[in-house]
Length: 528
Image 1 (tube, rainbow, N blue to C red):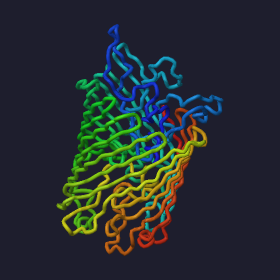
Image 2 (image 1 turned 180 degrees about the vertical axis):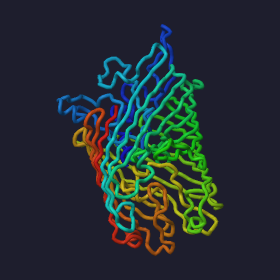
Image 3 (image 1 turned 45 degrees about the horizontal axis):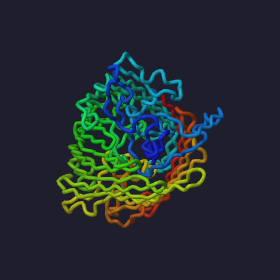
Image 4 (image 1 turned 90 degrees about the horizontal axis):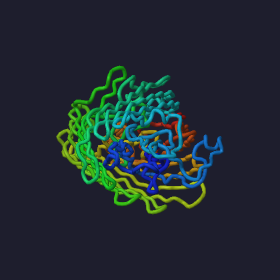
């Protein structure tokens, strides 16, 4: 549950907390030429501001130290500084949407990496470089709910580097390298743990037109996707490799509307080879976000996933049919925002189509309310309920299990990743504090149930893990608590410390007796 929280908690949010630097335009507008005929580069690139997630926080305001370095140097600020990065070790925002346009504003705060950002090459070209490195130590007890009760400790290393070239606002070339490695693991690495020397993003943008004072672009190539709450489509920053796709996207940006249409295929991570797209899957959709007034948004979307992967007879016989032989459509909408200190969100998703020759009818709901107390340390809390339907009978010619698509489930459904947004109830709460503006403490509680006790328990990757076809193991999966402490060291550096623990409910006690999973991790992250 990290990254999304902290996109809403980005440095220098606007008054509406849209995660946009105070001196930069909130959304793209048509670039123009100055009176002298020189092209105005101040609006390039047309950055897409990150959407508010569920469980978003209102960031600290007013005077204070906004980083550990501020405190060491006695640099007490009157307000949050203008900076491109969210003050958190994890950030789902793609590198191509990090906003450095404030560097063209006179009097901006200087930084050691400014010379490699927004380099003006003549009157028409812009070139920028950047990157990121992280290290994470992880220790898991009863890792992956394995019957042997094997623990797992390991080290993750990830390096990213990108180059970004613009010709006016007409053409963009963006390339981002990634190298992800795992060391010392006790269990076999997951597919998301390693990807040796590959491309995370490699695309070109071409401007097609200006419509109602907003640019229309087409993007072709390898690209990350991130939409709305990220319950269905996310870059998945928690994992070492992140998630990326390859295909075509057309997008239109105005102050009131963001509209995207895309067709892509997910990339298959191949540790020692250049990644290829998954030719057995096609993912396409239409996503519109309306911003009626500051602090509020409405998402409207239609998504379609065609998965032609053949399933084995055993999988079909046991009802484990979410990973292939399907063409499923998702219709959804979402409302989110705040009225002063009152926070709210509601999202509904309905799915229909075919899955292994069964008619699909499934749905999911996520809703919650929160409040920021007008007290020192910026205390805020949320009370939430999440539901995703399950299937009660795999032989009735219908499939009622919701498919979570390509989510950031880790952010919403506990850091142990034992529960995905499929066949589940989650009654959950969050409480946050900022003891100082540079220190963020987050605590969460989850009580998990199966929506249907004859369907599987699915993990954060959407994979079926445990099932009692008789339903006699009950529906109570367990209770989980998650604690995170983020220390914002400087504009570029963060340290994150976390601990999660699950207490088994009746279902886990009967399926995997004696299991008591927990997780401890420490992460260091630097961006430049």
